[in-house]
Length: 172
Image (cartoon, rainbow, N blue to C red; front, side):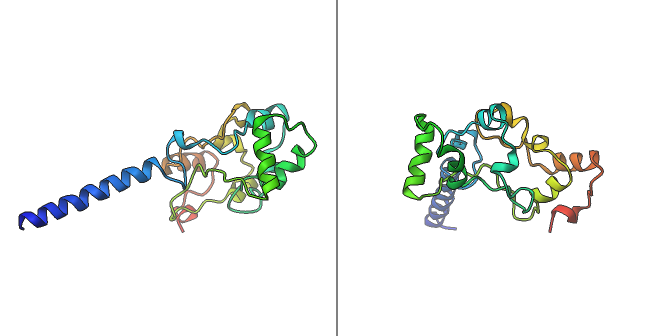
């Protein structure tokens, strides 16, 4: 291989490496780094789930009926905040989204690989509590992530609860 080809190959590999690194640092999809966990509105689970004792399923209402838990819509948030004091800066952000008729661009914190089949519905109907995976959210200011989604963690949980550990349960 000539010098020009080695140089071209090196430049391609170098550029691909830089592009990958940039993608990891500036991803707009699923947050992979805790520094990416900043939401457009600083939502406190400690206030809502803790002090106000709002059920997880009130805001994440699709968790019991679909694969995804879903994040609350602006209209759902405003169903309570419409009649509350809006002087708090974070509530003012919510009101501005409402006035502009724009959805809140929540940052997705977790994304499972395409080959993994997971449904919140199945786990909620199996009488699992949100805290089993997400921890004590009522004590957290921010938005919680599950501790891990590694297969061993899931298998351990399935075996402890005597749920199926057949590979095809989760890998469709």
